[in-house]
Length: 447
Image 1 (cartoon, rainbow, N blue to C red):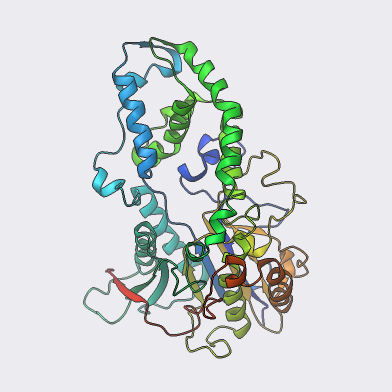
Image 2 (image 1 turned 90 degrees about the vertical axis):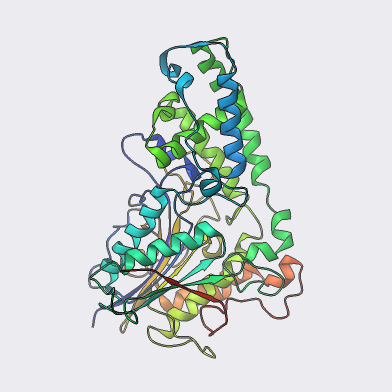
């Protein structure tokens, strides 16, 4: 029997030829990462994947309301000035804000998916259906989503792609998709959520990403403004304008395919922009620079470890739910795996690199027989688990993976309630993947 490989996935980007979109952080569309650490991206020889758990961000989106306000301010500044522009800035006099329906694209409640984001999710659904072969024709599929609308929409488009084979229009009980929408974590769900940081007051107190990244941005933005002002007469760009203009590269490309903003900046300026985002995420959101990131991420990873240990088709000990072999959810949990807690790999965030560590998806996979191993993928590229690389293709034996999480990472994460400073009533773990519950189930329209 072939050994089994269990997979966990995360996301990031790179290319041999410099591409600004590979360095645009959350403003960019999704890219697969290249092979890293000398590990082939393919499934190790003689291994077969029998379980996979994906944790993903939402797909590419329109700008947040605050960012859109910056775009509108820049547009007004340009329109109200009497100026001449030449060279790389010759186009700005005719530029218009690429958001034409604010209420349905970037409302005050938060940005929605762009067409690019919807396509990314749909295509991922098609890809994973073919990649793993877990779902036979006509079978139904369930995904989990946080309550934020762009997460729900991403899950919906994913399920539509996953179930896009064949035509079941008149067969209403087969080939149906369901999304289970989890409430944002509040003082009832605590760790049992896809947004556990929302019920961890200490998490925000430990977030120092904005201060550190803003200090770095102050270092390079004025220099860029001084360079670009050489192409203007009657209009003066400042560091705030540079922030908006660099954001517009990725977002404009996503929304309407416009890449003119991308050409304004040098390779080094794009690396500065990228690194500022790296600092913001590393020291702020779900990365080891935030001391509570492992605490809020650990419960999901531990639940996946328990599900992998139980094996496909089985519930965990004391569990009432048999999860599907492909588990889909939406958030970012890198710190809970300890992948980049030191600088020993030479990346993130201690030096600027050609790899953008903004994670879009993470997934562990499991392959099982007499020997069962776990592999972690980040943006589809395999990444070894610290101190656990003894299996084929630097995979981790399942028993060692469970011990690593149960001892090493548990020690880092601690107890959710204690470290977050809240009384959880015992809700310190993820139960929505292992227990039948009353979370909202929404049908997804497919053919």
